[in-house]
Amino acid sequence: MALKALRKLLPTGTTGAPGTPTGPVATPPRAADGDVLLETAGLTKSYAGADGELPVLAGIDLKVRAGEIVALLGKSGSGKSTLLRCLAGLIPASSGTVSYRGEPLTGANPGTAMVFQTFALLPWLTVQQNVELGLEARGVPAEERARAAVQAIDLIGLDGFESAYPKELSGGMRQRVGFARALVVEPDVLMMDEPFSALDVLTAENLRGELMELWESGQFPTRAVVLVTHNIEEAVLMADRIVVLGSRPYGTIRETVEVGLDRPRDRDAPAFQELIDRVYRIMTGRAKETRISGRAEPADQPAADQDRRTVAGTPLPAATVDGLSGLAEMVAHRGGRCDLADLADELGLDVDDMLPQVDALDLLGFARVSGDDLVLTEAGTEFAGADVQASKPLFARAATEVPLVKLITNSLRQRPDAAVRAGFFRDLLAHHFTSEQVERQLETATDWGRYAELYTYDADRQEYRLDEGASAKI
Ligand SMILES: Nc1ncnc2c1ncn2[C@@H]1O[C@H](COP(=O)(O)OP(=O)(O)OP(=O)(O)O)[C@@H](O)[C@H]1O
Image 1: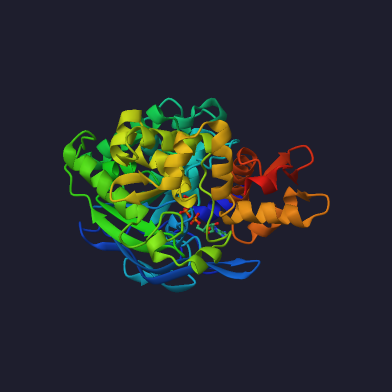
Image 2: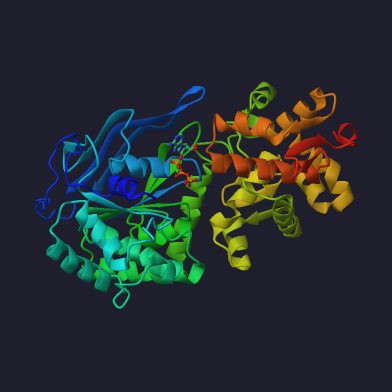
């Protein structure tokens, strides 16, 4: 990331108005516990897309108070990062307001600093210089910068690494630099965008634990934390409040959960597990949203509605056929119904690790979520019990009802040579998804279509081709 771009992301201490002189920021009085630091009122956010405005967030009313850790939890695409960036003043709201200490923001929020998933360090600067960047952007004099950076480096356990370059550090140590760089400016609110998800499990766990100890001990130079995560367990472990975002048809606050568990929290405590179950139920939205992946329960959904399912409104979950078959078989083995949290426990997984497979089974009509349980449908039971060859036509029948698979299959059928370049679908999908999401959508569609023997994909030619037996399978 270029220095200029990074500086934009760091708190400037100004309102961001052109021409505002940048200088050392006057430290605001320490907020008392419960004081509102950040507030959104009627926040909506849309991005400009090829087909016009793409609504991402709507009607977000949120308060972040001094003394609390707030987790923004939701599935991929629910607008968590967008909300975080609006709160940090890095992007403007489309309508509604975002305020810091009661003042509406007109630019970068002077009271926040951000920790990124991908660390965002400058490789040509040492640890010390990277940490000082946050202060440099605020116009703090060199001597004071150096002193504060050393303090932040010590606090976060990086002493001894001051003159190391990022490439010499492990992922965990790099993220410590990310934390030190944010904490050095002593922001009122520390903003964290999936800060542990690029780390291996043990490193993430260790860093989480250390941060929570610092927070508990009162040494954390920040009054509140906003954490973006898609990991339910992480949210229950760290947060005082969990704001669950739903994503249909755009991000809204589905429910806010007060955690209320003593710290340090014990993952094995029944209350911890109960909360995970409760948040899971909210996240999978059985009560307020009738399906996981944008498809209504059969009882709620007339056939005509199924026809209206679109590629944009029905994204494919990142689940391979092997993965979703594996889950279906495990549920079948337990009599066609099982408690997802118990199953995750048995497998040593977090319950949200299984969400893509659960979503996929639901999307294909192979299973439904009922309360805490995943229940196989008749088609799902047949699929789970079939051998590989027998499962293929069953899978093909279900997959051709999935909009992206249907789009690829139908497009191929229209072509005399039965071949279409991947770029065609890439361009169509780019209207609704980021380039990374487009690739993930195509990867899953390729896996599903190949297994179903509906189409093949030639990676060298970047071309889809109709499978010769495709018509017979549907
Ligand atoms: N700069 C942008 N321009 C256009 N669309 C965007 C932009 N940033 C995000 N989006 C779209 O907005 C939606 C929400 O994205 P966002 O990153 O806020 O969600 P998220 O819940 O944080 O997802 P993830 O967990 O995958 O990061 C997605 O559909 C995404 O493609």
